[in-house]
Image (tube, one colour):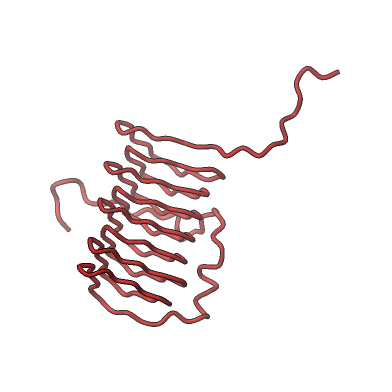
Length: 177
């Protein structure tokens, strides 16, 4: 008789990176990652939360992403929520985006881009539907989403591509490009 029974239930794992922690390296797997510190690497999981004082320098591939801090990298996801303090500096491919913060980069949205009164986006935007509250800002061009782009954003499966493995490092603090 076995002393330990095998647990066949599916459990969702979570990784938490505290505010005073800096991690260099890629995260890949199932579950979620909550970043309150700094990550220098790519994240490929089911769910990502970037906290208010957090910074990620790398690319994210996930089903659901919430940004309330800073991301220097691309995002491929199904659902993106950029909170009031959130900022993204690179390109995004998503089914749905709720924007209350800042995006600087090109964006492809297959279903809905919803910009609140505090939201701001600067770049080339390709979308199906758009809602902008009074006060929301759009700087750049807008074009209609076409079905041929569907292959780019079907269902996101958290496996990074070669394109996502390259990380662009930002300039050190205090220096401008």
